[in-house]
Image 1 (spheres, helix red, strand yellow):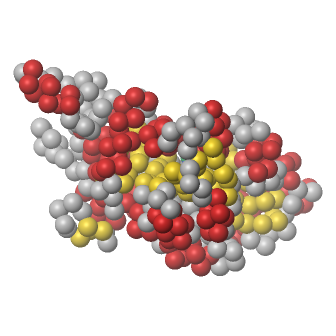
Image 2 (cartoon, rainbow, N blue to C red; image 1 turned 60 degrees about the vertical axis):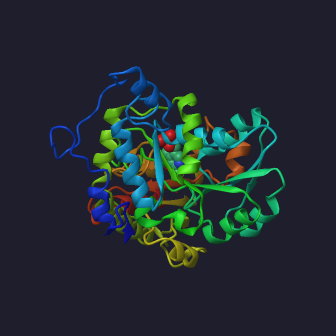
Length: 400
Ligand SMILES: *Cc1c(COP(=O)(O)O)cnc(C)c1O
C-alpha cells in the first residue's frame, strides 16, 4: 500500500490504473494526446508567467507537456516519490541527472556490474569532463565506504544489476552516503516499483529505462526519474538544455503500459522464478543468476528489500561463447533482441551485444563471461517458455 497525493491509501494495482487520471476537456476516459510542440497565451503577462515557471507542463513541450505530467505523476506515486520527470530514454535520463548534479573535479562511485550505457557514461563521457570514478563490487558494502573521498558527490546504484543480477544493500549503502553528504541515484529498471521501491530504503533519486517494464510492450523508448521536488528542479534545469524530450504520443503509450504494470510484473516474476529453477542443475549450465533462488548468495538481502524478483535472469553455459550462440539459435519462442521487460520473451548474449560499447577489458571488469546468456521472460505461459529453454539446453549439452 502507498499513499497518493490526496492521502488516499491504494494498492499498486489500483495506483497503476488511476494515478495520472485526468479526464481533460472531452471527459474522455483515455487521456487525450496533447500532440503539440508549444502552447499559446492571451496576454504578455500570462506568457511571461508560464515562461518563468519551472517545470510548467503548458508552455513548450521541451519544458513539459500534459502527457509528461500524467506519466511522471503515475511513476512518482508508485515509487512513493514527491515528484517525477519523464525524458526520451533511460540513457537520456541518467546522463541528464549526472550532468545536473556533477561538475569538473567531482568523483562518482558506480557498480562493477551495471548497465553498459551507464558504465560508458561514467568511463567515457564523465571522464572527458574531468569527473573521476571508482567502480566497486556492489555485493560488498564496505567497498562503497572505502571508495568515498571528499570529492565524491554521487553514487550510481543498480539493483538487481544487469546482467549478473547482483543485489546492492540499499539501506547500508545509502546510510554511508548520507553520512558523507553524498547523493545516491538508483536504476530501478529491473525491479520496477512493484518489486522494489529504493526511495523507501534511503535512495535520493530513482530512474528507469521506461522503455522496459514500465512501457512494457517494446513499442516506445522513454526514461523517468523520481525523487524530491528540489532535486527534480535541478534535473529539469539541465533537462531543458540537454533536450532529451519525450514525444507526447510516446508519453501516452508509456502511461497506457503502466496501467497494466502490476498484472504484468506478477507474471514476469512467476515466469522468472520458474525458469531459474528449471535451468538450475542442467548439465550444460555452470551457474544461474537469479535473486529469487534460495541458493543465490544474496537471496536473504534480496528478500529484505524486494517483494518479487522480476523476469530477468542470466546463466553461464559450460561451453562458452559458441554454446551461448547455439543455445539462442535453438530457441523458438525467444527473440534475440536487446531489451527486457516486454510482454514477449527476449534473449541476448551479452558478450556479443556489448562488444561495440565496451572494450574487452571493460567487459571483463564488469564480470561478463563469454558463455553468459541473459533471459528476459515475457508474460507467455510458463510451461511454454520452460519447455523451449530446456529443449535448447539439451541440444547444447548433447552436441558439446
Ligand atoms: C535499457 C536499460 C537502460 C537504458 O535505457 P534506454 O531506455 O535504452 O536508454 C538502463 N538501465 C537498464 C538496467 C536497462 O536495462
